[in-house]
Image (cartoon, rainbow, N blue to C red; front, side, top):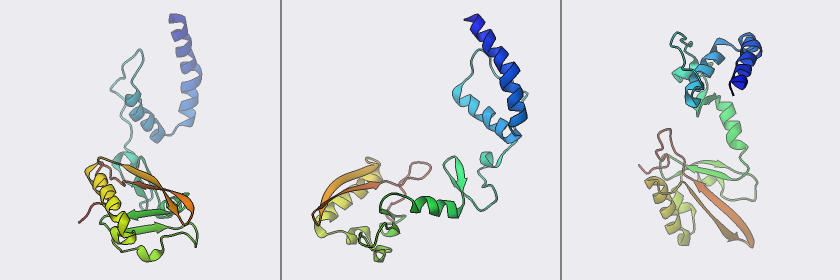
Length: 178
């Protein structure tokens, strides 16, 4: 085992580190340093003399100023719009109130129609479905459910419907009533 450790250290010192020093930018080294603590260290404890430069990712600022922070990165408004429009299904989003705020249609024969934008979610469903919609919204608000999915028979075709609770960075439900 000691021979294998010695061999690993030699490869790191002779191959990996020299190549990394030529290739990685100071910002990438800062990311390596930051992420290393997540994984832990083997055989040695890190020193305290290295202080990585502060990057835009560390400060939460967007590179170039026009991007929106999303997860661990940033997207420009055009990239975010492109991402949303490439979803492989009809996507509907009601937030931050119980009215529709977004609709991504796939085809002219598919419902719902753009006229639902601004309407209460409950008013866009048949009366016999409103109690199911209310239950889903209640479960999303309370955090007891993050996904609601089921099949319906729509004009002789089986349609798979999935609703997702859209949550903020702290886990709060963004489709809450106001």
